[in-house]
Image (tube, rainbow, N blue to C red):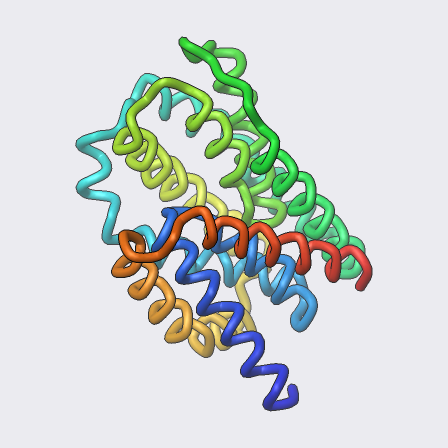
Length: 240
């Protein structure tokens, strides 16, 4: 890979880490389509899950105490069932098709994040389980199971601290299951390990900066920047 291309990929990884540290989610939405332009999508998805597990590991103990288990358990149980299904599709799909699927999913999620206005006052078990199943499948398929959960939780009446705790615990469970599913499907390889190690420092730097700067950066401006970046990488993935 050319030096310029490699430096650009590290910059994207740092931005994804910053986004994760700043908002608590969103790294996979940037990394999955952007890095799939440079590496095999299956390799990228496995690497993204490893990065997400690394980012969230230290937050789980505190989050467990604030988690709304009546909401998280149905989400997590239905997701756990579907993660291996998504991982099996990931292992079988042709790389170019997988890249375009990722681009299409990201594009759809961005539009939902921008326009979604629905709210509910009390979570229904059927809806909660359905959202969990969709998120689990997308976690296994593309490492991007966050948007359905984020949209669903933020449409409710929970305080921000409870939503954040729910996100952390749910993602920790589903990503660990995804990791096991990738291993069983033969997707965890030496190439994945090398990519993970090579981009981890840039991701950690971005992550730490995001956590330090979330009170100093204009949130509305940063959100517009991330949305624009997501639209760009989704379009590139679709056209690749």
